[in-house]
Length: 183
Image (cartoon, rainbow, N blue to C red; front, side, top):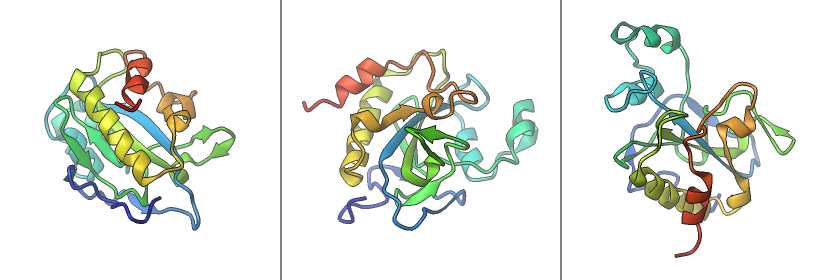
């Protein structure tokens, strides 16, 4: 990570999550992982994702929440459907987003990655605003963590293929990657 860059982005709404810890000593942040999340599944809006990452999800609010409220997870960033960016974990810390995972022969991707969640579902198209904000945020992360390049951006499905399917077939990888090109 570029030590001249902030760990918290000033343009994001900060929502510090307890679900993070220190990265291993000397860990080089060189992977960006794209995820999706919607709570309840395939429903958008509301406080539920934020509540989930902050360990305050009320299991009485939806049957699905009874299954997941005990989990302790987070991501560095969330991009809502309207493009709002929330930051839960500073970039120099390890967010708990990837779980059991492997990228190019290296396991424990949380140790060396930044996780960005898109409010969405595998089979529901993402918004134009989300693509624009994701490209902007990706460039900001790549500036802060220069070891991340386009070849070191993966979906959760790529690093945990037997467990995860996100960001799913509705995510337009060529569109997103083209937005990373210099303008």
